[in-house]
Length: 303
Image (cartoon, rainbow, N blue to C red; front, side):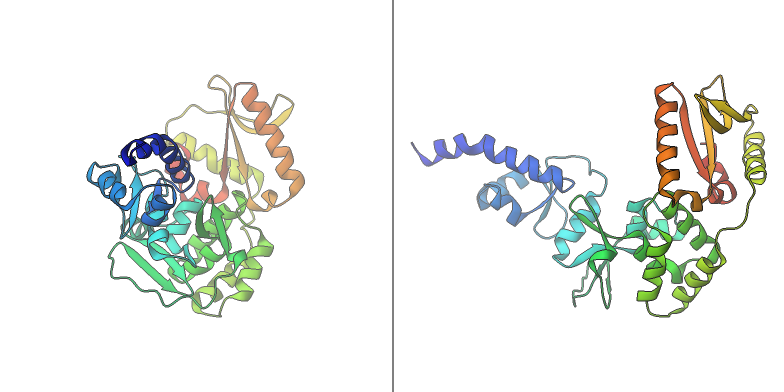
């Protein structure tokens, strides 16, 4: 059997390995990973020439996809930078779903931010590398194969660039999304150097969440509903055996208003999960809003 025939017989297995490996890493593979999966150097060249490999940095490719999957840009940056790096700062906040203001969102769209303890530098305009004194395992969260600074570390990194109000919103959302806990945030503050941003973060955490009664939060939501021209809902009713804050019965939409303190308790988490599952099975659409969304992101609440 000739070399060409042997190569052709191996092609389906090689392509399967590449698809599997690319699927785990958001469609991004390095030249070395392609060769390890069975392509020769010439085949890599031919795949690139045929448009099956789209360059995303030196020796880094988007494989067989005309559209970048979510996180592909960040994964490409990590693979281009090498080991001992993590997506960080506004790029990490975006991946984790933390609220950031327009200027930080624009920065995340313009450049991928990476943190590293090495002396690595870059001349690429679409990358920003932060040299940091330490980046421990507890400060890195893995989203599949993509290393991202954990929520507590991300908040601490962004603290110098945020107002106290913005920090409150990020903390609230991180806790509501169960990305971190107060204990983890406090440990992160203790590990961090006492710069102005950390002092600001410490003060925000010491102040705690503003005290908002259930009726006040409900009135905030009703005011948003009225301003958006939506029909007035029922409030404080029981549906499927659960007490519901706000209900649009005909539309089968229910809304719960949550403060982040409740989210940190395991029993509350289990109860809320049962409630959401029961309501979904009964054909309702359950939505949740935090105090910070009601006060700082009113348009998002009615989108």
